[in-house]
Image 1 (cartoon, one colour):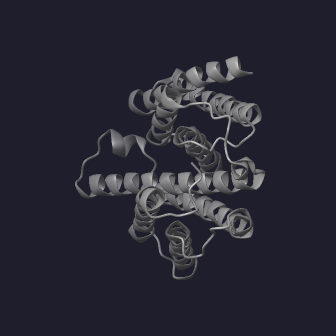
Image 2: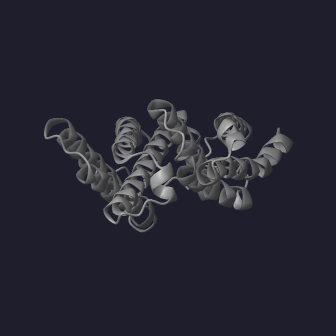
Length: 274
């Protein structure tokens, strides 16, 4: 099993760059072979990456979240899976290059620096912990994708206002569809964050003696949840649309990024798992 894990660790960045290349060539060069192959390649990548994460979980008896580079690989998988969901949901296949390249870099750094960790605290072997963290990572990945679509929306909006009708205008979906994709990703991220928060509030107090509701990371996560809940309610009730809802996705991502990096590294207490 160890040989297979090491082999997949080498193959995954190669698969990622192959998928990114196919989506890029389809977008920028209008290549028909790339257009035909990119979606099957995407699903092959998801299956292979899923097998890799399962093998690591079984071989080392803990979820792949105990080192920063294990988390990088899980983030790469989460971004790719969330993108595939949005592609299937919206039936728009032309934006994968801008999303999947993020997953490629996460997996590349993971494959370069990941180490096998056999001895970890018992709490890190909990299946509930794995479910909690994977739900949160999938949620933050969806939020990241939502922000990328938001930035593509603003880029296209600026091009239209400036009467520039280059490759971006020709190949990206129209503003309405980009807004829909950003909103779909936001809804997905919101649901997954809700699951992660509920599981965390049930399980964390029992697992950590030092648990505190005043933990900055916990407060930050709830703040992000409230921010998105407010935005989605405004979209549904007050008909917030267009640039307002797009800016919400970008603002939410900035706050999430700050929470996952600065707050997590320097201010969080018990709520760090590596």
